[in-house]
Image (cartoon, rainbow, N blue to C red; front, side, top):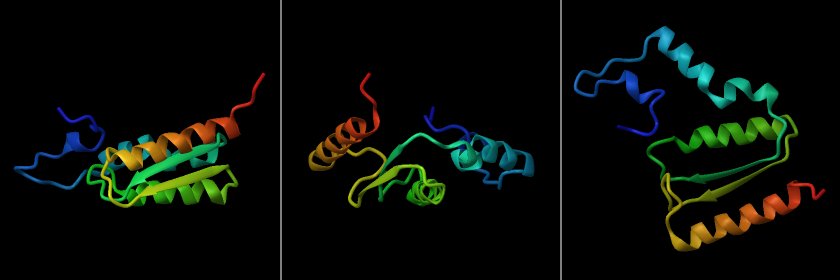
Length: 109
């Protein structure tokens, strides 16, 4: 069973059919970009540019939409990774940047 089901569930790959209008509406309502007007939290996005599960263009679109709203955001791009950032050097870079992001954006009380 795939872990990304909102869109894959409608496809029967032996008998491909495009999604119906209702299915497209459901996918849109579940999409983060559909709710961008509510985005306020600083957002760190990491993209593997060889991702075949989630098109990197979706992450790029979301990043640019956040920046257009002046939401603090940072984009980490890993050219040689797919969905999992599983190369040691990239994983280390991701965790270092995540730590820095939290240090910069979480307020100490």
